[in-house]
Length: 83
Image (cartoon, rainbow, N blue to C red; front, top):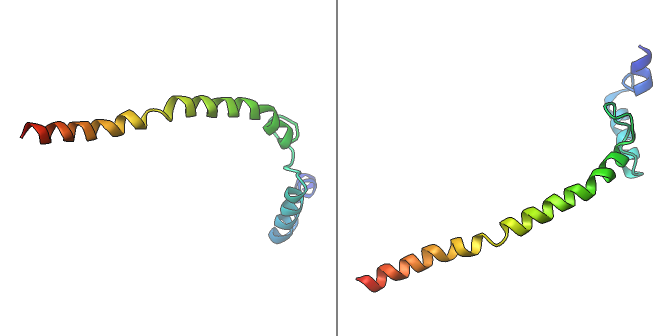
């Protein structure tokens, strides 16, 4: 029962949601149970690796549609000239 009270789970759902939105609006994302650290800190620690991965994915994947898009176009042109 003490844990429910400490976590605010004994309050009505709309009050819990209001507290959540209030904290979210002030940048407080809560405490991670797994890492025993603020969620905001954990996100900020991992953000550079996420940006790096997104950039590499963009560099690798962005150029591929251009040759793939030209392939059907050139194949269609060859078929027309052969007839």
